[in-house]
Image 1 (tube, rainbow, N blue to C red):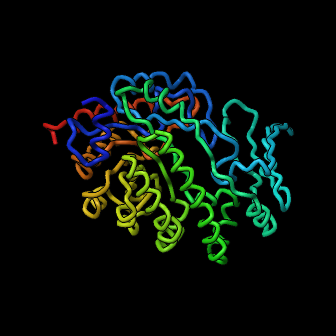
Image 2: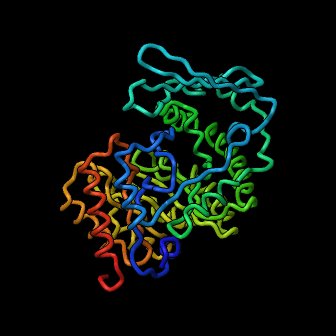
Image 3: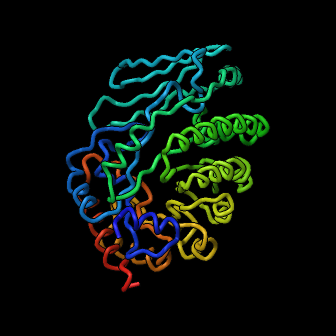
Length: 381
């Protein structure tokens, strides 16, 4: 099988010639590494890992439509003006976005050190900090995207060929959490649930409209979504049902009508919500973490929903960074034993984000690959 055939078969719970090895964030066909919310040029120390990926791995190749106006949350209304500027204070570089709304001005600020090693910005001021900010945000008139430019889809599909599959993100209603400081978001969820439900309802309409535009434009492959912000252990499972399942079940149904595949990324202790993933139509879950990082051994997930959902994982990125090759070998063999043979794609729990790439990490990526190839072949199962 080609890598593309192998990955699609695994995602559809069909038999493969071997268990695919699709490592999170290892994309030799991409130009950028994802670090936080920033795309930065790949460091040369990653060249051996990218060579390994081209020769032996099955690739998740990420792409996204060209931006049209504002994002799915702020709408494309021409009645709203925004600007972004950068400035330097001391050892830090700042990026500030200012949005003029019918009910006042909103702003958010990100910063990073000017040193070479720190490439990602982090948010130090969020758009919504007060009730007045929330009122201003909600005053933004909504105008859905009229026509998405998905020309990158065809370009990237040709670039990757049979080496893997294309994956793009679909905006999620609970994504509005990023408008607040994390502690403010949690507090509002606990004390003003009605307002947060209303906000999620508004965002759902916009996310659904965007997904329709994406699918009707012809972009149909693998779609990544998330919702871990309201998953256990921080929130009771009822929050996951009310703020994720309620909305995603409708978005997933739409994606499936266009023969798309849903990849759900969710860290945390997901044992109590496993059945909810299957209920809302999830095709694949990443990374399904066992203790101590999570509470869900692959064997438990397989027993509960393995006939409905593909599992992507579950090798911890910390083992890649600091573990021994023996530890990685054992973890890969255990994942194959518990999660295979069908409906499993071997992967790490997160993307590599170290500059430069440590030699220990490279050795462990090689070990993961070799163990996966050896023990994931059909005759060895």
